[in-house]
Length: 560
Ligand code: DHE
Image (cartoon, rainbow, N blue to C red; front, side, top):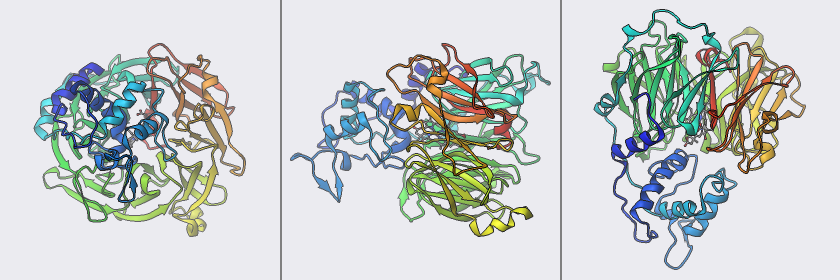
């Protein structure tokens, strides 16, 4: 393991038993077995994240056959909802919708689009569960702790290394932030979603969409994967224990399928425990697929904050006694997704994206602090914190579904911020963006700039650019940097999405991924934060579909 290729992943996926029966509903259009297999994989890779394996909907709409099939006599209204049918589904898949569905006409062929339109009219196949024993069977300890170096064996400034997801290549690039040189590219499993750092900064943990988690040791001469484990068959989040005395002792991983979280040893990844997240939503309805979305470690308490998407329950998981696990369940808002800490690191703010709300947890009291209504589909990444000239400390989120960035006033015990108390937990300002489709925002304590992307906007000009606000004067329109043009790479047919600003450790450079097609060479464009001029373009034939970038120091210390 440690070297799981795309093909390996596909094989593992089938081994996991995902080649299960496809119970066809009466009115579903015909499909061959080969088509069903191909469609199932595309659904998993492209659709399940938003619509769910069981297709009950979250960020995306419910796609159960009762909504997707055409009735024999044509399209009909069912329970107030339009039944879709093959033709309309093909249009939606090809061209997207204003509701946030992206277009797939540049990724899938017309035949594949037709196949997917037919596939989602069949009953969804239910993948198998994944037990603690399954996790143990998948565990691969490549280098035991005692065989690892006892000191750093290279001269790299590890705290300024960037872990960069090469999404469709199934790889992770480790890039030296001081020299801008690619240090090492490692196999990582399919589509690493996030990387998180160990409390010590020595290890990088990655989590792949295929459920594979790796631990990479940065101390050998060259970084290497020292263990791997599979938490399930679909996964997005991972974090280590950070509380004093527990640094790097445990690692938690949250899965989309099966809906559960697992806890493993932080240095070897040996599986210890699995806990299901199935249960009741905040409305009291049973949900069979409550997926684990964001997870963060609280450095001030022996606790992880775990957001369960479909139920709207935020769990505070205490890791001091895993046999007698203590969990606080905080009812918030449904469809929890991504989030980050406020400036004081006392409050965790998480987007309930399809509810158009942000939930704030007070980790000191273990209670919900606020539910804040926002513009459509908030999508903060981890958000961004700064002191607003008029409203004091704010935490910011962009929006996938609206053309604004929302600034939310956050409480702060520092005396000098007391006067802003009346604004707390209100959206105090919306910064105007050129369109919807933002995914990530970022700033740095040493900077006066605030960066926002818009990769999901359907317009090329907008999606290939980033927007830089001056935090000293937020009445000004943002400066526009066209990352596509700045990369110097030739423009093809597909939009190259400019995605996820990430600062270096010093806070004087911002790295943007230019996320092109699977077959195209892409790039990471590095800007000088002061002059907004290009400093370097990091590219090579191996730089394929770069997306998330995680600076070791900033990720370790939640600097954003
Ligand atoms: Fe993400 C964070 C889920 C699509 C890049 N993404 C997250 C988190 C979740 C999530 C739950 C929070 C993890 C945490 O902090 O613990 N993402 C999902 C999806 O369900 C969704 C919508 C569809 C899917 O099938 O995965 C999705 N995400 C994407 C992408 O298409 C992106 C742009 C490219 C990619 O690599 O797949 C993408 N997501 C990211 C990144 C982060 C992230 C870069 C971490 C941001 C950060 O700054 O922490």
